[in-house]
Each structure stands twice: as structure tokens, then as C-alpha cells.
Picture 1 (cartoon, rainbow, N blue to C red):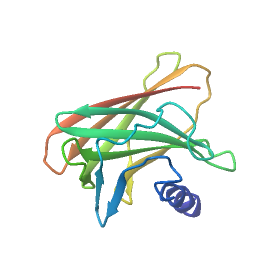
Picture 2: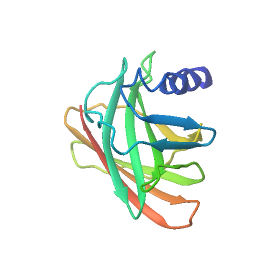
Picture 3: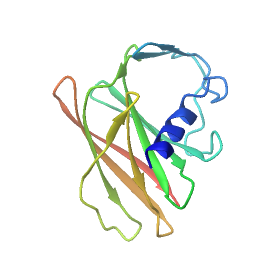
Length: 154
């Protein structure tokens, strides 16, 4: 399971050109974005098995999420990255949890997302057809609580 997580994270670190995210620069623990660059078509397939979800800005923090197919029947992994809305510096410290609402409108318990390479992730399985909602609660390094909302139709 640990190897699959490492493989999934390595897939995320493909050069920015392969991810069609023109204008991104990686600098140690920060990620700065050229705000004039073209935006990726969120909600569509990116790399093999990667689905880019919506971006959302809440109180000066931008949350960017994507789903990755995991091999061996493990379902998918939702990964969320947080950056400062102004300047694009990556936010890597804090606590993050997610509540998942299934298409039948049942909301699961909050589950802690694990931090890896500055992003936060958790395995998910979609056992119903329809719209899933991810309500991501955070308490990042600034101590402020924020809630981000992402969704995906299975």
C-alpha cells in the first residue's frame, strides 16, 4: 500500500509541461504560478487516470484537487494542494479532513487526509453512480479554519 502511494505521488510530480500546466515553477517547498497562464480544463482527464477537479479560493487560500485511479481495485485517491491565492506559495503545514457525500446524499464521517509532498490525500471508493461531494475542512499553518467544496460525477 505504501508503494502504491509513492507511485501515485510520483505520477503527480511529472514535469509541468506533461501536465499542461504552463507557467508553473517548482522552488523547494513553494510553488509559484504565473496567473496569466492558461487554466486547465478542470473536471476532465489529465494524465492517465488523473481527473482534475475544481479549484476554490476561501479566505485567501486556493484549494486544488484531483482524483487518481489506483491499481489493484483500491479505488481512487483524492489529493488536495493548497496555495496562497496571492503569490501562489504552497501551503504545506496544517490539518486536513474530508467528509464525502455520496449520490444517495449520505454524508460519511470526517476522515483525516494524510500529508505527503506538501499535499493531502486519502483513498476513496465510488460504489454508486452519480455526484459525489467532498467537503474538505482545514486548519492550516495560519490557524484559521476553512472549508473547501469539490465534486465529481462517477
